Image (cartoon, rainbow, N blue to C red; front, top):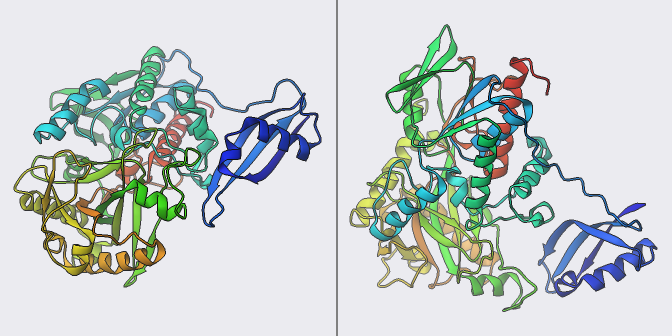
Length: 518
């Protein structure tokens, strides 16, 4: 017999299996000697001085407590019907895995390199400030997801089968804790091995994964996809094409526009990445409780409406690192990530301002209006940084006062910082909103507004500035049959889990067309 039991406990009690078992025996009425249990959900409540863990458990007086995880199941699809997937990020990889599960053969084309080779290019970017436009933090096996911390926060049932995504991550090597925690996190250091295992499973099942394979053209006949060109040389015939190229593949947007395929400007967000010492964030969030083995490095989530626009924290990374995420040499872009232990001395987060097309141009019908604005900011940052991959930076209090910092604290950003008055980088409507929001954030988190906090800019790749419209029912492009715009790059996802779900959904729609039962 099984029961579901929920109760609150202190963080140190949550680490004590004996305490938990005795408490569950008390609440369930089962004999503790025969009781078996496993965690179902776990969350931390630090809103009050007494910090508590809310635990939900499945309890049984039988020897085996059932686990309802959904493992990836594969079959040999080498000779099955084919579909093309452009991009090996979360959307593309999960689309390929779902295709195999449904009996379709996925052929994945990734412009970048495999994870191991990709690391060499990241080292050059960090140490020598050399950007490889095809292999960087955004492009390559795993896409931007490989180096975006591995936060798996999407819990909306409306998006699709979140549990299946988490279970598959566990199947390929992630900790089972991600299926339990309210804010699951894998860690950038662990993701490469997981991504590699996914790729190996795709190939072992008869699918294909091609690296250094850039989509350079799309062929259309009678309003239907007929094929693609890779690396400006090789043509492949496909009638089903999933476009999962991510939010930074600008050349794809230009290609679609060139081929007369409808795209739209899309609202996005832009701002800065702020870095504090992790100990300060811990002290603020945990009411002065520090150096505690029972508590994880603290995070935060901030949002404020300023002059009718949202200003909010984005991709908060406890114990993390600020990374150079440019995809071209003459631009500067920041993002953040954390290792699995989140044990670096700094905490960072994007703080960004929502932007609509009509905020920056009277010609808001131009599909590239937001993309062009994004590019202008990134190019200007590169110029302000001395035409290098160092990052324009400013102490938070100096930014609030509108003055250039005389010096800068040490940061986690490896290429280095350049002291810049960030009001020179952003137009007033962004600067003023950021300043007003930081003032309010300082009220919400006493100590947040400090001279030791450093702003690095820009944080500009929060989401795609272009959307690729598709039919709500079929998931196909509104004009082109067989073309499935997918994931963040098309405007239909906002993180690893939602992108993975979108990839799987696109494949399920293709399976319906190819008369395969879903």
